[in-house]
Image 1 (cartoon, rainbow, N blue to C red):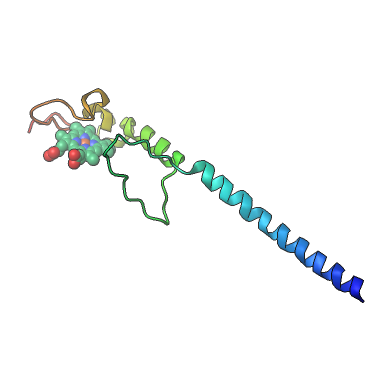
Image 2: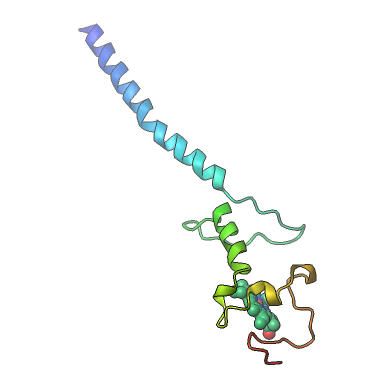
Length: 104
Ligand code: HEC
């Protein structure tokens, strides 16, 4: 009888450990994709909703969209046309020029 109790406790213990295995791998997968902000000193960390965390994949998608001309009305302009990285993401002009050439 005592051996049966020990066997039952052992089996339940084993099942409990096995049930935690997927959780362990999921959290590790999430941690691997957790975005590391590499911000200049004094720059505040952007506020990100807890249920929609920043990931490397999202940053990579954003990087591609930033240079994608298909987003513009005439498919000739991307964000990077006006927001030049070498000019701190400005166009460096006194007055802005619109996508279709208007000045203002
Ligand atoms: C045709 C030129 C042009 C394009 C294309 C353009 N922008 Fe801009 N953007 C501007 C100008 C000019 C301003 C500044 C407007 C102002 O201050 O009145 C601005 C302002 C901004 C700001 C606000 C910056 C701040 O300091 O508040 C953000 C963010 C921004 N743009 C993101 C984008 C993104 C993302 C895209 C692409 C989807 C994009 N822009 C495409 C010209 C452009």
